[in-house]
Length: 345
Length: 166
Image (tube, rainbow over all chains, first blue to last red; front, side):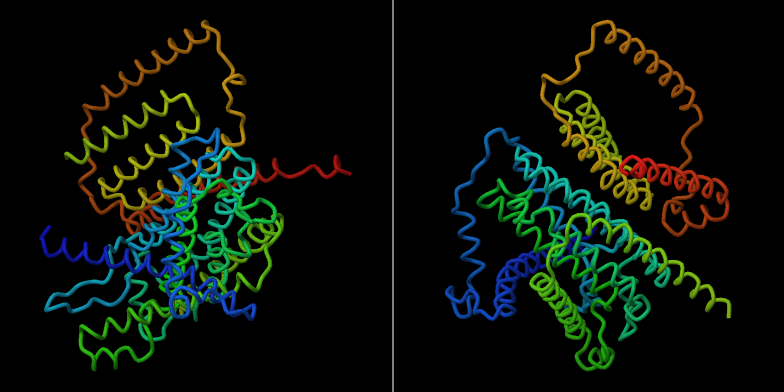
């Protein structure tokens, strides 16, 4: 392993880490701004021009709040819960290709931390680990509301993972690869997977909402029934870690959706742009395009939050098991039939 | 090779901790850690598909259900069933005989030698899929039918009896 390779990977990881944190921090501001916009209010505007320093103020507040640990809570697991939630939320971004290989001072650098050939399954693994943070934190709080939230979180995640996996299988039939890099390369220009798998994308989108515990599927923390659910007993920065993990999850799942279904860094006319900007600046335009798509998805998450009311628990389970899973299976069958038919003739 | 010994050491440590911790929740968490070290073993053997499937199915789904059940149970010390000494002695004898049997069978195994490296690419998804759907098609289909019937059985058991609820 040469030194340059190591430096290159460390640089990508650090940049990715900083960008993820920044976007997650500004998502909290964006959420409040979008809420204000949809409800015809102004939103936070005191910290700096248009409230741009609000995330810093929020972060400072989190640090200076008193950390309380409830009596009878399990001390270690009470800390492990939010830590795990934060840790697992970061892991997913490692396999996402952020752009075409870039020519950086004569060196070809792939804009991806690692290209494992089972990238999609890796994302699934990380998503399925995400539930441990909620479960451990909820249980360790020694609070009935938290336990209810934890159990809701676990059952919801397991239920929607199945539909998510099935929707991906239909996509895999089209792409013939599990590697994110190959899937992104196949969607050159505007040859996006969305045009082949619109139903699969819809199922994946609904499942992504459920996996990130966003409204209308935020039953693990719904404040009207469970007073905050699994994070009821948390305060200060542990609470902040849970909140941050949710926004990072949102960012990563937006990136996954953009890469799998909406072409990732590809955009129409990219060959023309690459030809004129050269091998250094051309791929960077692609990175900007991908970030734009991700931000659009994040806006969509927020838009839905302030538009659609929360599901009831039985409705959530019905939707997952009786509507999404059969739909996903039908999608697989139809996709497989169409592919076989076109292969033969 | 150093990595292998390190990971093996971790595996054994975590498996022992699963048994020796008093709190069942900790046991499950150590079991999750054990499965994670298994995943690393699979990666070291270049069996990426098995590694990720072990990760998703065991760590991500089955152990979540274990935790789920344990968290709903009352884990107070008073309600814990205490076994009598006779049962403990019987358990030790039974476990000891099982250990002897295992050691005996492993002694036989070691003479066969390990032949995993003749096809290092066999663990990758593409090759594994081709093998499963050509050479091992019948066992593969039979096991999937087995899983399907288990699933149908579980749904049937979970279904409410309509006649009782009127």
